[in-house]
Length: 89
Image (tube, rainbow, N blue to C red; front, side, top):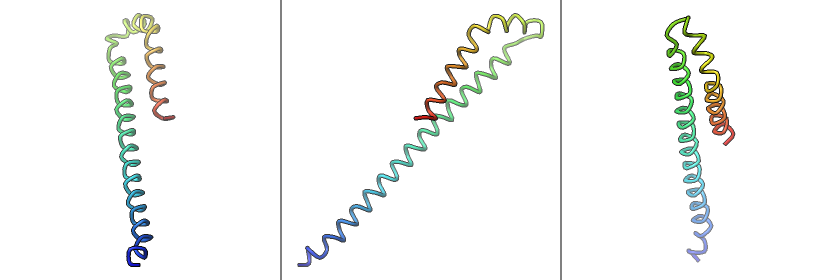
């Protein structure tokens, strides 16, 4: 009778332990995803700053803008797409 009496308490204890483990894993995954998103955001900001600093003079800025128009917007659009993918996922 003792085994039958203790069975519900052991079952609930096991259930609580499983729920606690699952919640811990959930938060670990959330933190990992946030760290990856922050790394991508820093990389995007770094690339933007590098593009700003790549312009040497005001005279060369017009030429740089004409040359860069083909690729910069595409690069920034692709980065934005990747960042939005992490936000939705």
